[in-house]
Image (cartoon, rainbow, N blue to C red; front, side):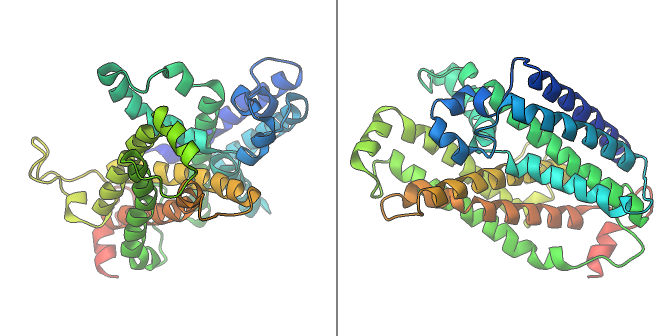
Length: 360
């Protein structure tokens, strides 16, 4: 399935679109489980805040349900046409335009910070709950709420739409469906920006990490003293430090996208040392994290703008997250450059990736 993804991704995307469109019709007719806006209990705890967090913060099943149904049907048709390689007339540009718009909408526009919370706090809970009983008063049901899981699923399918658009472009351009290379000489842009992108993706998350570690160590960094004390008593800063530690580890791993140990497992990794690192072992998580932090970054920018900007008192709370779109863009560019550099000879078209890279 991994090597032949371009053959099935369009049909899988079409099936999901049709199913979700049917759910939209179900919600429009009064069915239960609407996961957006007024159906999102977590957002409705602060209704005035909902639209600032989510672009669908005020959606109702009566209004959004028919739209979801229509988009689901249109998406199913478009995905099938792309999977079948339909390129007649305006379809050659209209289908990928629809696919990329849908991908952006699902991975960025409708997302908020809660998708990142689910992904980031899952390993923290896996370690903290059984061994330390932490976080106190929180269980898996608090983390895996239906609206959050719905957003995570939408993000994954949005990535699927991007892959479907990529496969369609390759087929329409006559490029190799497996590796994406064609008869035209490749661009050198990715390799030129690779190192700056890696260093940017390494540095930006450290701004967030340093503020969270500082809070956990007792430094308020100028935020409201009462608010800081409340967070300290609730264990909020320790939780933030745990999340920052994951971010710091991720930043260090990002350096592997341009280091030798990112291509060959180092000596201290018993059982793996000296072996070639599978490129997708780095590319897939890096791309997924890039999408997550970019979508969360856009939400934080909306919040900051709605509050009138960053101040000397609020900068530790608000400024680091607004930089996440830079982090996401840099990480994605670094991952794509790494993939381009690491790809070997294609078993389908016979193009040699290392020879191509060496000729640049």
